[in-house]
Length: 321
Image 1 (cartoon, rainbow, N blue to C red):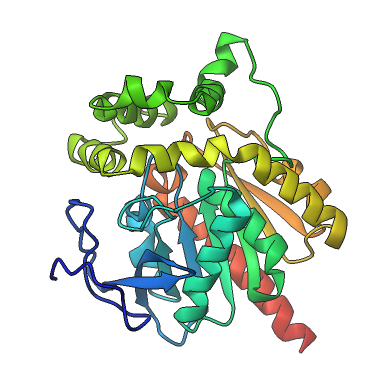
Image 2: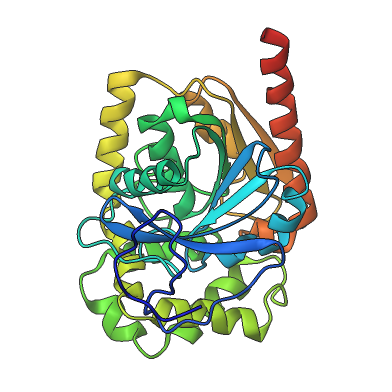
């Protein structure tokens, strides 16, 4: 691949944006950069071209690489697309707001450019923030929505940070990331220490991530503009919450199938319960022996849960037909 920074002339631009990050290859998958509403998004896709499409969005402090352990197995049955959010991994940073409805519009633009008419959307952490807003705005494009261990702004994300030490360590960073300038001052040049804390403290086992994985995510956060971009999702969370409230008031709850995936040692004990007031067809599953980073810690169980969810509702659609 070449280091070509020109504007892409097709939805399948193969050039590498100038992030300075190494590009990880995954057998059976290709890399594309897609013009998505004025910015380029990085997408990694493979699997069955004619199969149902499964779109994957990762959260903080990760990139599309968070899904690598589940992508190859999902690809046995599905067309799989993992997309770096704006400002994440090899995608361009946003020139403006990081509110989740704006971010969702970029993701949908990319999928439209990739000629994906409908898809199953699977998302973790702040990826789930974007995914929920995307479902509110473009429910007609989604077959189903699976959200992993995430509170959604304005919906299920607590408005206050707990002060109980047994719980506060899971959510303390929300307030820290909101402070103007200070996180950049304290974290610039120390991205690896920060990323390592998240990956080790929030996983069930401190050995869930090796040094190479920590190095990858730290480099992604340290790349030009990426730290500010990552913080932007938190700094614009209040706008995201207001827009979610407005959308729900205007259109009502989601009606598509929704799967809430929790873990035995994650942040949200019962994702389904947190989503049911806002989604008429929500069910849940709890993945055992996992912390916050479910796809990394229990990839086989994650694939099993997603496949069962898709099969169940796909069979229901066929029965109705």
